[in-house]
Length: 431
Image 1 (cartoon, rainbow, N blue to C red):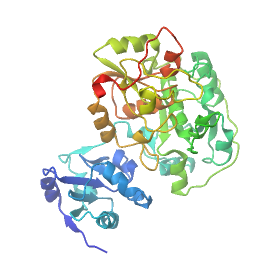
Image 2 (image 1 turned 60 degrees about the vertical axis):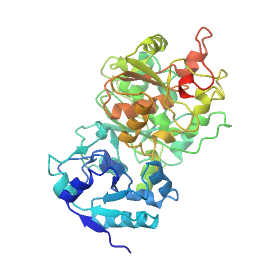
Image 3 (image 1 turned 30 degrees about the vertical axis):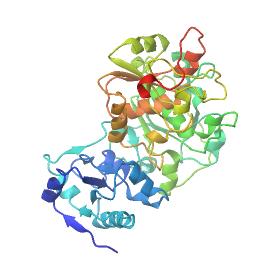
């Protein structure tokens, strides 16, 4: 095994001045986002660091992830983790991949995070993105960090697929079909009265801490309901509608059910009975600004202070395919900015890491900035029906961007109105 040179805090400060230096954070994505897992004074990561958790080295395409982040063998790599052994282990993987300019930094907890003058970054709403370990503490009767409540509900989300729940879920979790919160006639959120009834039926009021997750089961576009296998996107769709309704403390299990499995925790097949409550507690919607409809979307298209962002695949955006077996018309909304979800209507790989956790905020913000998606504007994310738009919205909301919404109608509602114009092909500005 190679022995990698350790550097001091002062040496790391000097190395950061060099544009050829890349700092790699080999800790978990939770630690990178802001959770203080080892009692550090400040949560988050060294400013400018890239997230490459040691966990990811178990994946066959680990090095492709490294390359996708623009980290090249010619770069000087500085790796840090919580322990010397973890940093050293990560360094070995880089060395085996022909990265030879490697150093390790072993004073993140005791020096860097302790010193308020050392630059750090963290996800603004990191507490709304929880780990499997956090959830396990909660159901074990402990009081996890950043939790101060007496009532919680864990929700296994799915679409027309209770088998996804019954075949294995987190102990104590209830199931929720996305149809409880969105109507299949329009795929928009349900009426305030319907939302109130659905949330009460699932035992959720405005003051309940709700933890949502779904199960990824390899969607097939040839299936009648492909979304039934894309449960974690559905969970984030449910999350954003709950935020809109007025649930004050909504969390998402980062990585979905896969994260629970990876952690090796107990899996239950019990059909947990839902315990309904009498009153949601606040008028719905408590946060109407989180969703825009067609009239407001049209105003946003005209505004220099707003953008509607198309979170669809490139073939959908240019009108090669509609993206859905129930949407006939192909094309895009004129004036929409391309926010590229990934390959198709049931995948969000451009917003996810290799283990299905949410992609690091700085990377997403950098990609968005390159096409003019910036926090200074009012942004409304849309897709075909609302799922992918909700996940992109959730990314921006987690970052603390101040004016973010979902255009609920999306391409489905827009294209069903023959009076609405649409575009095909590659936009002139992208040619």
